[in-house]
Image 1 (cartoon, helix red, strand yellow):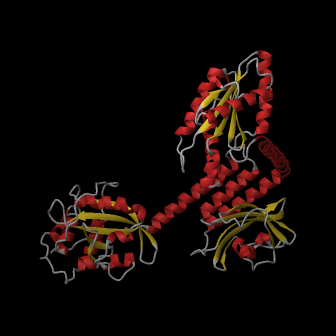
Image 2 (tube, helix red, strand yellow):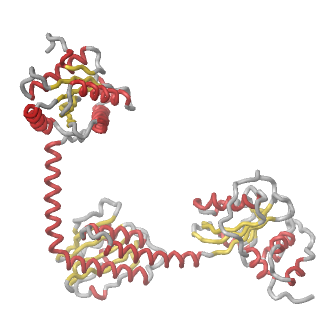
Image 3 (tube, one colour):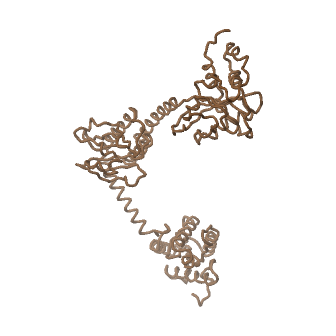
Length: 536
């Protein structure tokens, strides 16, 4: 008998991991069926038969052994160096070799459900690969997936799924795995390093309009993602204290403007920030960049400004890492710290002035907001309305243009409050305001008049136009979706005429019309011209 150029185990491994067109997809097809007894030599022969491995392999497999009972062993299958398993349509493993059991981390995987080790995000895709073979759409299928071993370790592996037997829709398939965790991690590390450098460049040289504060915040967010640590801090030293300047953290206890004593290493905050690792000014140039201690992970580098120690850029977490950070992480962090120091050195004076100016602008805007807006609904308040009414009244009188005013009241609001509570009533007022603000024209002026009353000033709008708009707004409120019960509004409309001598009289006329709407049954619009004389 001629000698085979490769060992049977090598040939089996090569066959199961042979190239198959990637990305094969199929519907999740055939109904589950019980697995039929299958000869392992025949299974192996079928797995290898379609591969062009030369005449020697064909000679070795042209006379397969008789089927064996389930209690017997098959060295070619059992001793294969790659994980092998026979899987039925119910995902149950009829037989697994030792390599497969070692891969999933249990003594014997036979009888287990294969999908229990799959990463949840990969489950549908891998099932589609199996369905492709079980449905008879393809004799073999392959792909890549993530697996969780019994101890929780995440592994990456390629899968090769091959049809067994002559039936178009087989009862059993042969599954082979090849672990590629090291390759995937190396690829991820390389890709991550490229992404980190690209992200750092974007922070440094990206949007020119962003100030230093925004750039540092982006830098901390990028670092937390890159180093997989939840807390990022840029802080400065002030005598014997360390003050946090910028913080990236979901834990609100860790925030900007916190100060810690350098000697205080016992508090939970100090341990979280890794302050036990902070250097003194004398030895900061020799400070170890990477450290894992006291059950938590910490990665930090000193920040120098004008050649002097300014502070620290650090990333940390409460959970210890399984291994130290690599040289790539240390180099990236040092680059980040150097950039922060250079930016502070270059922009510190100008940035201080800009922050003061921004703070002043923000304070003025807030004061303006408080002075002119209703805090509950966000609409303009009565003070702002009175100013606008005086302005529009003068314009209308001067130029002889129309001017109308709509005063509206939420119907039975007191009853709503008494029944469902004041928080529910507040929600009604907010929704009414939002509904109306979204429906009015840009030239109109909408405000909360007080309580459950709102007012709408309509420049250049006559009585007919005001009535049409008011009724459209009434319908908007009535047709909105309300949580507790339906909500409606009554409205009164008044328009500038010779009988109305001033702005206050215009408002009073609209109020008289509103009273008539409520008297006539609510949820309606009334113009003051339609109000009986004895009411006005």
